[in-house]
Image 1 (cartoon, rainbow, N blue to C red):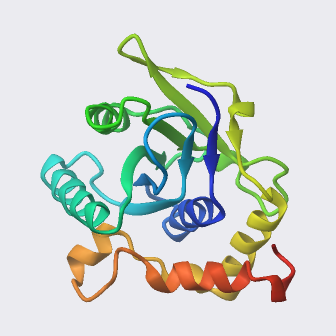
Image 2 (image 1 turned 180 degrees about the vertical axis):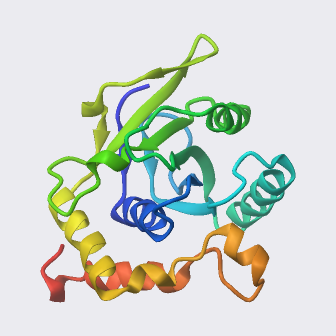
Length: 205
């Protein structure tokens, strides 16, 4: 596997998900609207759970629904992300490895991203992300320089702006959707807010 590119939208939503539930482990799915093959470009993500990450029935339900939605929106699942409850621990858990393995059944070059909570600050110079790739039936650590996030400074500022304004509370993960099915787990409100902050009028593009 070569480089993986993260879009502003994908990173900001991952970051907000971890910040919204700071004492919990959180996870989600990485999506791409690009064609299969070549470098992996993660264009979006779907925040999944913030409690009981290891509950297989809920995870399977979420995977099925996201898969259906992806087929309707010309997207595909290309990876998995997780932030552990212990900020200093960015190692994949058995749950993370199991779900990532399942994703590789449909996407051979799927990626596993772990959020490094210990490095999530307002002044990070590089994305606080640890990447793993599957090789010889094992998930191995990849060099951090293979993670590419164009306009990282702008992306970091947008994430901080949304935290400062309280807009991270708009984020809905699949867990919250199951508690109240009127909540939109595709997060169109959050997507629109990110787009607004990234608009040329705000100097972020």
